Length: 386
Image (cartoon, rainbow, N blue to C red; front, side, top):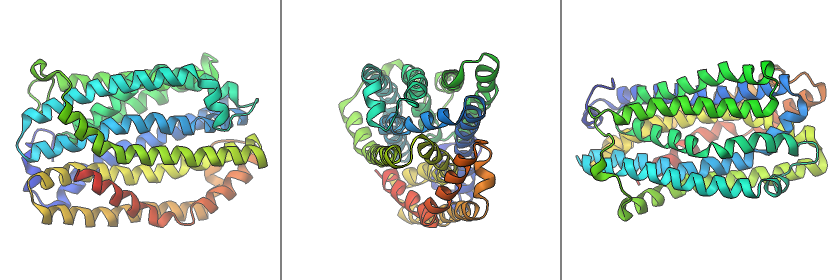
C-alpha cells in the first residue's frame, strides 16, 4: 500500500500483499533502529572502552522501563486508532491522537523527573559498580532529560503507522538512525564527550525524527491529523489506551526485572566484564527480536482494522502468516549465534576476555531462540485486537 491510499484498503486487499506492504517498512525501521543501538555500542566500546560497555549494559533495565511507559501509551493508542478507522470513526481516531500526545508528555515528565531524582540509587540497585556507575550515570542523565522528545517521537510514530502511513513511519525511524550514526562518532571521537556524547547524539537524532512526525500530523490532508476541536484528554479513550498498553508495559517491566537479576548476579560472580558481555549479547539478540517486532507492527493495523470491521477470517489469516514469518526470523538468529558468535562480538570490542565471555554467552542464550518469533507475534496479536 502506498501512503496515499485510503486505510479502507486494509479491509479489501489480499492479506499476503498487505502484510508485505505494511511489514517491510516496519521491519526496515525496527532493524535500522536495532542497528543504531548496535552501532552506538560499537562506538562506545571502541571509543571509550570495555568498562563503558559494561556501564551501558547497566542502563538496560532503566531503558526497558523508559520504553515500558512509552509503550503503555504508544501501542495502546496505535491499536485503538486502527480499530476506530475500521469502524469508520475518524473523530475518535483523532481524539486518540491528541490523547497520545498528552499522555506521552505527562508520563515522560513524571517518569523522567523521578528517575533523575533517584538516579544513582536506581543504577546501583540495577547492578552498577564503582567502576561502571559514572558511565551509566552520564548516559542516563541525558536520556532521561530527553524522555518527552523520545516518548512523543515513538508514540506518534506508532499512531502514524497504524493510521495508514507505514512508509512514512519507516522514514522517520531511518532519518533518526542515520542522523545518530552521523552525529555519534562526532560527539564521541571528535568532541571527546565519551558516553555522554553517545546519549546526546541519541537525543538530537530523536528530535530530528520527531520534527518529521509532527509535520505529518500538522498536515490537514492526512486521514488523522491535529485538530484543536479534539485537543483534550478523554477518560474513555485514556482507559482504552491503558487497558491495551498494559500488556506491553508489563512485558517490558518483566524484562527489566530479569536484566536486574542477571546484572546483579554477574557483578557478584563475574565482575564488570561479565555485565559487558551480557550487554553485547543483548544488543545482538535484539536485532532479530526487533525484526520480529517489525512483523507485528506491520500486522497490527491490518488486524486492528479488520477486527474493528468484524472480518475475523482476515484477522486469523494475518496471524498465521505472522507466526510463520516471525519463526523464520528468530531461527536465522539462532543459526548466526551458533556459527558466528566470535566474529559478531569482535565488532564491539578488542578485549580478548570480553570477546570470550560474550561469544559463549551468545551461543547459550540463543538455544531456544527459534521459538521466540512465534511468541512475539502471538502476544502482540492479542494487543492488536484490544
